[in-house]
Amino acid sequence: MKIQRIIKAILLATMIAAVSAFIPIRPVGAISNTHTYVLGVSNVQDPLILDLQNLTSSLTILASVSSLSLVGGNSILFVDGSWLASASSLDPTILSVVATEPLAGIPTVTVRGTPTLLSSYISGILQWHEPSLPLISEGLKIAGSLSSGTRMSSMLSIVSGFDYAVQTEFNWANSLIARGPVALTPTLSRSSESRTVTTSANTTTAQPYWEQTTYDSYDTGNYYAPYGRIMTTITAYNLENSNSSNYIWFNVFFNQTIQPGIMIYNSPWRTSNQYSLVHDQNTTTTLIVSHGPANVYNAGPFIVSYNIGVTAGVLNATVTSTQAMSYTLKHTNVTDTSQYPDVSWLHTISARTTAGSLTFQIVPGFTFRLYSSRYAALQLGITTTFIKLQGNTQTGSNTVTFGLLPG
Image (cartoon, rainbow, N blue to C red; front, top):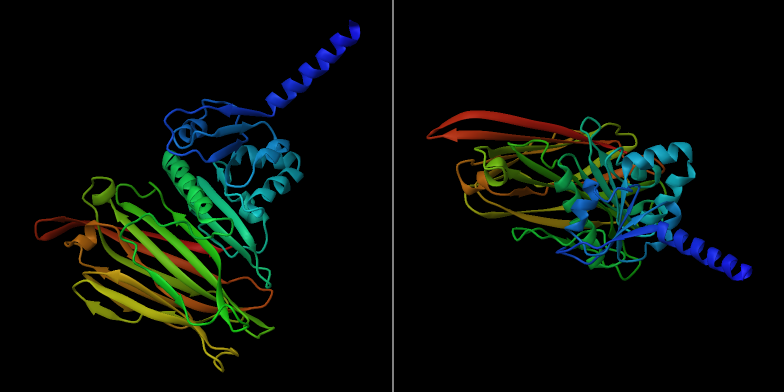
């Protein structure tokens, strides 16, 4: 009898330990059934839990890092950044354990606290951050590494708006899962998306070709309300089979999507112009060798097209390989304002037309040469001007400027 009581006690203790390892949440009316896990949160009334309940019908709170073994493929992991900073300061191995999730291809979102902890910890990621603006979340997924050591990564950083951040990060992660285990670029949901990318090289042979390494998005969220929202996406491609032991070449497409306040905040602010700058901070280690588009002046709807890449015999390149980009504009003038060693563009918009009141998207691009074992010394600058109109006059303007730094 005593032995039976001991056995029952052991079984009961085992069951309690198993249950305490995670807490399954049963949301009602969620829009998805994607397996989603939360680490670093214990309160079921936490805003993160409440937001995720509306997004997925499969939500589980993990009690500790040891419970990460429950996170499988086709899952999303949300981590509380404040908890991660505190826990990893006491036990540095915690950060390395959590980092195994994005490294294994699990879309991992850090919310609150210091969202950049994971991306800063993992080496080899080609990325940019805005140091002067506070981030509320950052999503990260690693799809592998190239022979150069560069990580194939997808990231989404959001500045402001907690509910907006949770939903946008969830949709980003969910779209990556839908694309497959090696996807970097989420499925684009905007019907106005018009860009196309083609590669001139044959990727099935030893010929040079461009391999996507980075899909790094930076979303201002509601930080600049009521003026508008700016989403910047940096898509980078590494030149494979370049036949160079000293240099690495990257093509970068610098996508900027602007939603004016008149469209999303019911305010009077319209998009007036967009200035995009790529500043070369060190031409010894990093050199911009190609860029586009050139000057385009056109009032009606039109397509902007250009090619970037490398040419054999030019600036130490030993092969020729390019990529082509095109995007649609209307009621906009494009001016190439580049001055060596920097490249820049000014898109001037006719604010009284639909171009000023609806989603506005531009995709300039550039090629840069990186000295092996160095970091990309490039600063990306974005300046957007919003204006208010009354009758035939302009009644006010506001210029939003921020810069993205490497690392």
